[in-house]
Length: 111
Image (cartoon, rainbow, N blue to C red; front, side, top):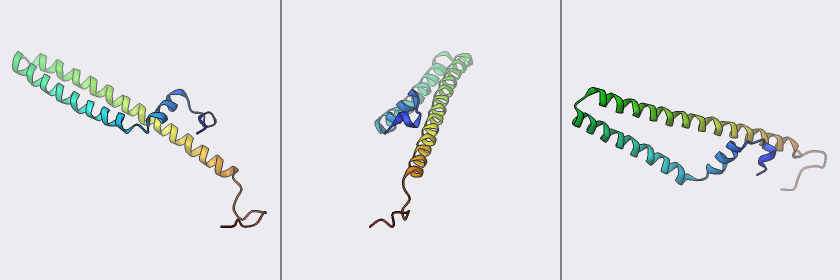
């Protein structure tokens, strides 16, 4: 694949190279589930041990901040993938426009 002709920047190249790694996606999904479970246990433990709403609130806010950070990262990733797809489509359209049409002046192609 000629990434230079498509005009991919470094981030887009890394995303395109990593899109074939399904193991990475599975590991990230497991990490999200594990983090939620860890924070759930931490929240229950903090509530049980401290019996203080301030500690529970602090743990809850920490969890919210982490999930917002994860969602923003996901959103940035989706934007990069969309940019790569648009560039790939533009490149395919460019190649199709350059390709000689079937049934042109040299006659039909044998099939």
